[in-house]
Image (cartoon, rainbow, N blue to C red):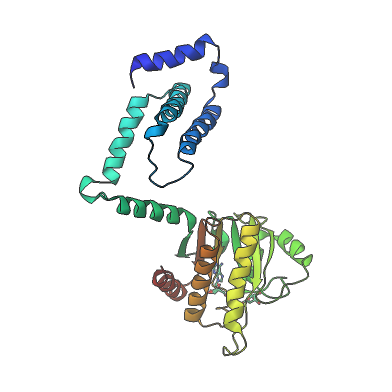
Length: 291
Ligand code: AR6
């Protein structure tokens, strides 16, 4: 950017005493508004629109965008040439020439893949104690239908959350198998606990698989309703309730993937926090298989 141009823009601002209005946040808003005017010229279309007849408007709107960029750089004490050069260097590392996509089809594919990446959550299995997980909004409790606590992960969650969790659970009137209810997380390092009673395995002919899938769906529905974007599950039903781990893992991962596909952009992270090596291995395989 020529210094002369920058000086002109800044002089225009200072002559009118407009510096006071030009804080970085307001400038960021102006840049995006002007950029959307630019897009408006193409009717928000990603198609290849011939634009010779629109050059006047393009010049006007692009100048507005750049004007605000100069003001923003000034407000943040940044040198536009320097930050652009730095970005080009970074992009050159990210997209080496010999690996860059050359055709328009490939470029469109790359953009679509990026969009999809944003819309679908990370789905993964990690080893650990779910009561210690601190990078999610909610953890799920493999509860029983009374919702009044028990052994296994349920006991661990109540111990770590403290007695106020039980107090809140007492007000909920229990929960049916396959459904879910939400409470605060109290002393746990997350915002919510979602409680779901999984099915007791009785040989597989009593709707156990459907009920387990319903547990995952109910929890994820509650998550989305409550603005929860990151959620951690234990391996529901595979402890005291004896659901076979391999089948449980497949149902868990497939249900979560299906839900995520039906609710694009709603979740950032769905993870299973697994206590023992065997369960960890089985869930890792399930996650990798359906990737
Ligand atoms: N973090 C992560 N996973 C854990 C933890 C923990 N802190 N503790 C145990 N697990 P279970 P279920 C694992 O029996 O089969 C309760 O009494 C455990 O190794 O907790 O759904 C309830 O009140 C296993 O892999 O849940 C119900 O009555 C998984 O969590 C009943 O148990 C689930 O084991 C529910 O049985």
